[in-house]
Length: 253
Image (tube, rainbow, N blue to C red):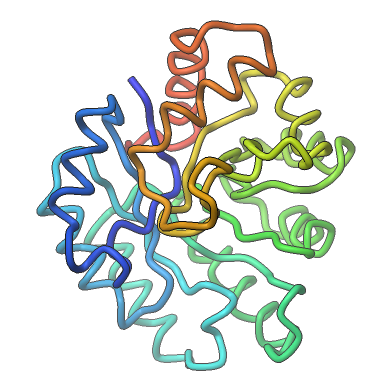
């Protein structure tokens, strides 16, 4: 069994063929997909997606790239959703210091407030950490939550070890499939296997063989094969281990 721990199946890119995308994922052996919301206005779409498609589960959060459109009332709405819907995680939340036109202070405020909500509801978090690993770790040390996943991890081994100490797994997906991604591939090869989960981030971060095309959860088996090759394991061993890791980190899955 394979678990895609980060798949935006509710994204507009799938509006034309979402049924077929989900069917292809199931046929490929992807038994579970975690669908993280990115805006409060999108919560209903995320909810309807996971209710429609077997094996899909929701996470609710405000993505750092959307905090400029968010307000205090969104945090109150989010608290209501977490209490009522009991999602598997709070997410996608975090910091993004790659995009320069989004106020870092506003990102940090919403990140901190959502960590507090995760702590209040005892939920793991799905973290966006692009160019912001150390600032994210700083807040996780201040506001302890029950762990979660550092999505699309691209930090150092030392930073990876710090996430692991805090009860987090690290998400690996399409970026790992490129031969030039030497740091990511070395981490995937050498980190403790029980610290790794698989993800697609579909429709984004397509693996090498898609040549920049739309990603989908059906690509997860080939992504798992890449991890298996890097570690000298069978695809079955990788699928079993990463699925077990996902269930441990996200108990509601």
